[in-house]
Image (cartoon, rainbow, N blue to C red; front, side, top):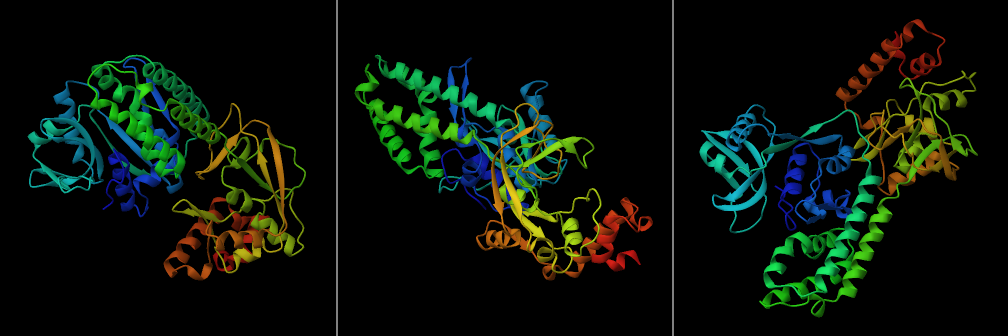
Length: 472
């Protein structure tokens, strides 16, 4: 059981508990820290309310983080009919599948406080939920009858669940962060304007959540979570100054009680972090030196693409094609083009090189050199046609920004393994069952490309050498 570790983290704690069922071990703080959530600010013009940090529970932002675990968060919203009808429909849907779901409840019958819980099932006409708020005054396990649940369900009628995925979408984080930066600038202007004129007690109470909460409540937690220690200290000081003004019931000017220079410096630092986060480094691995521009080439996905990745380690393994390496080490005559063979996957978001035959890692990479290229970001065309979460495909010409020569890819990958950045799954580590699954996958490849009838094909020659019994 993973409990909430910071203010209003119930939604993220719920996600972390459901992920645990999928053998993904993360906390609510890790989800926030490793996503874009700390760098987001929104403004609702209709209510004049600003939102910041963990108040913004954008499913696309969360899924951008989750995709490295090959899962995504889904939402089911009920928007047709009366409130009672929508709640009835949600309750009916809860029991239609066995998977656990995130559902928002009121924590008491008469209190308007929505709290994310996990629906775990129905036993003896009672719906069971887990509450992740660790407090002596809170109940961890909640059991509700149908009528009680109707009362306790949030008025925004929806639930969420996590599922495994095979395809990935690319989040337009550049535009999202640009909007966030603009919203933070607007928030700063409004806070300064509000704080430098007389305000009644009632007005100060009204704008406490509308205006001040994103910075002086939410970001106090956020700054701690992202390890911005000085920012955290400064915001705590400003929070204390701000809270003390509510002891005064009459009109006052907040700037006489709060250090607005410190507030502006704090906002300036947050702006800097947003701008820094908006710069993504893209990599491309190749055995070819001196590339200045990457041009789209015909790919296994049927169209011309440039392939990039946001992960340096992934680009590194693409400097060496195992089939081409096999040919070079045996001085075999090369075909014009090699079929791609890069055996890797991901374990809990970390690159895992896998050996499908004995000594595959050394046989492929030892003594091989290559080039890592840092590349410019695609401007208009950006997608992901692969099954790799950190990949990006584009039909644009991509400018190379920097080139790095790697003398021995084998040694570089061993270094990354020793430093904990990647894992290497050796052939000896596989179980008999797993080896059987590998061989089945290779058989499927042989049949798919009709390699039994193509004895001189370079792919056939490679696979027959590594898996001879599959051709008998």
